[in-house]
Image (cartoon, rainbow, N blue to C red; front, side, top):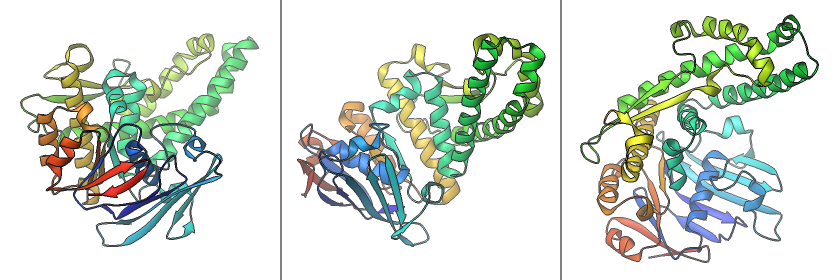
Amino acid sequence: MFLECVEAENFRNLRGKITCESGLNVLVGDNGQGKTNWLEAIFLLATTRSFKTAKLNEAISFNEDLAIVRGPVHRAEEVRRELQVALQQNIKILSLNGKRIPANQYIGELHTILFNADSLKVVRGGPEERRKFLDDAIVSIHPPYIQTVSDYARVIKQKNALLQTLRDQEATTEQTLEALRPWNEQLAELAMRIHRSRLRVVERLSENLDETIFGKEKVTIRYASSLEDKGDLSNYAELIRERLDLRVLAEMASGYSLIGPHRDDLEILFDGKDLRKYASSGQQRTAVLLLHLASLGVYFSIHNEYPLFLIDDIDAELDNYRIKQLLDFLNGKTQTIITTSKSLIAAELSTSASINTIVNGHPISS
């Protein structure tokens, strides 16, 4: 997978076009010049989302009504596709080869793996961050899964609203069970798909975890279902239906859905110890990076091509040793785009990378 170039119009402070090489690309410049904004533009082109804001209208330049990000992508089958994302107020307009298409057809045309400061939420944040990491990995290899996650979130939201209404009405247990039955049936079916998909992606990630990249540190992962020790997980569909019936009084009292994969977690161990409790800050960074590189391997095993690898502010998140080891590992595998404010790092990489200096959002090739 190769992004030939990325062009932006009225997207934050960006101007012009960056031509990308197939190997390492470095965006260098002082803080506040727009280096991260270019990575955000590439991420938007791939995912239709921003990693900086949930409100995409905030990315439209001041006093402008329309922002556009576009770029041609080459895939393993040597087909060139022109991707474009246009933002107009709160509307996203997605285009492939000049033709408008829905999101479910667009997602998957370009895939990126992003490593930045927020990536550390996978180990430092709550279970929802680790569930999101797994779900993103699944979507990368099976884009329709995004609809399953969306449907599940909708059912949970609607069930919660119903639970709160039934609680306010002081409904009986029988009335509550009857009212919840259609929602619980949907929830059980969707939960089974999510549970199965997450278990499989954890297996794939484990197969691709390479602890030799940065030394002797070993990272292991395990999917931790909230229904562990509650019954036979191998028959998940039956088990979740039993638990939904059994916990109806507790759900009535709380007004929230208490059963399902929205309460699961990903256990991450570092040399056999809980990463969050016992690992240093540097070891946590290493572990997150290893998980991202494992995602890279999983994608390649399915698609026989590598996604783009984006690294924001590389010298802030990694020391010189890990930078060298990482770039050596990525060399020859994936198109990599990194940002740095250190001109010395850019100079050291200049013989093996394409260098663009970013000034007021405008790229200047070196």
